[in-house]
Amino acid sequence: NAGVTQTPKFQVLKTGQSMTLQCAQDMNHNSMYWYRQDPGMGLRLIYYSASEGTTDKGEVPNGYNVSRLNKREFSLRLESAAPSQTSVYFCASSVGQVVNTIYFGEGSWLTVV
Amino acid sequence: GENVEQHPSTLSVQEGDSAVIKCTYSDSASNYFPWYKQELGKGPQLIIDIRSNVGEKKDQRIAVTLNKTAKHFSLHITETQPEDSAVYFCAASGGGYQKVTFGTGTKLQVIP
Image 1 (cartoon, rainbow over the protein chains, first blue to last red):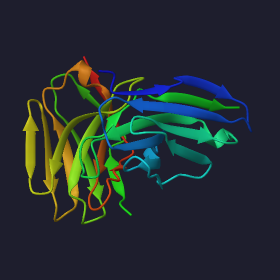
Image 2: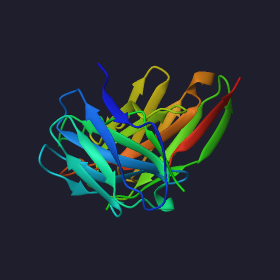
Image 3: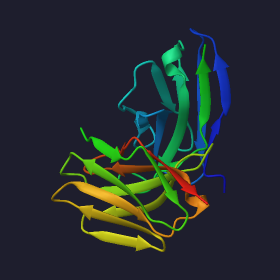
Image 4: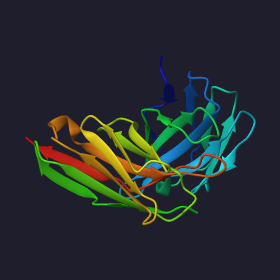
């Protein structure tokens, strides 16, 4: 049981390049999330998908787009990377809309130069 | 929206001593308060949680207390061990869709 799997684990981008972070969960969860983690800032929600077919903005959505491809997969796209998007990105999932445990992936370290 | 403040940002304790991390929240509608532990190079993992109808919850060496009136909650780790060294996050959530707001984290170092 892999839980939440995200790829790639490490990536270096040049300013202006685009890339997509992939995420998949095998726990049959309805809700999925993308967070970014920066020193001293904790975990900030970028986008979330409460259920398949829906996506909503979180706290820091600017510069990102998401796609809930199916129930298992939720991708995060940077259309034109900026140095301010250098961060560690975490995909996560939970059973559903009722508040409960969030399960995180291992993280993706992104550097934009 | 919800605002969660967490203190201290770093904490060093001797092995065997207790560690306490404190958080405050702003939204009185919040009713779920999880704590996550993040080891180096890993994603956060839930270690304990408490709901607003409970004042205290224990799980072996870990306990969490909640004061809804004051809107603060705390994590207590007793008999600390080197493997407790990690970053700990508190969080608050409640109402409607699940949108969990995290604190800024506490880096706990347990000195052998």
